[in-house]
Length: 96
Ligand SMILES: [Zn+2]
Image 1: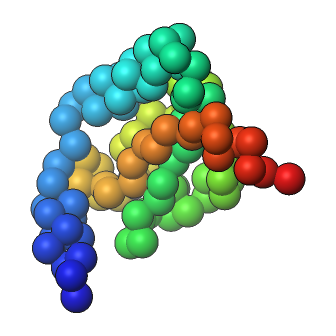
Image 2: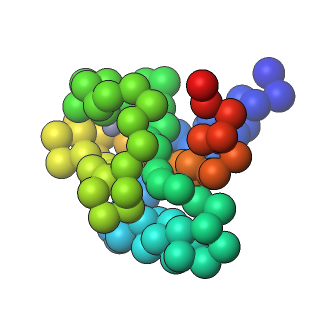
Image 3: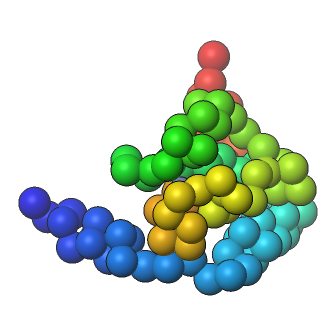
C-alpha cells in the first residue's frame, strides 16, 4: 500500500509536549487572519484509545474550547495519533 510509510511515520511519532497549545494557537491565528478557518476538529486515529472514541463525531470546536490532545485519559499518551484538523469555511458552506 502506498500509504503504509505514512502510517508508520505517524505511528512512530510522538507529539511534542506542547502539541495542543501550539496547534490550537496556530488555528486561532488562522481564524483571526483571513477568516478561512472556522474551527478545529479532532481526527481520531484508526487505532485510537477509548477516550478518543468517546468524543462526539464531527464536532467542531473553537480552539479555546477544544479538548487537549493527547487526551489525559489516552492510554497511548504522546504516541496517540489523534490529531487536530482545521475546519475551513468552504467545508461549512457545503453542509446542508
Ligand atoms: Zn488517543
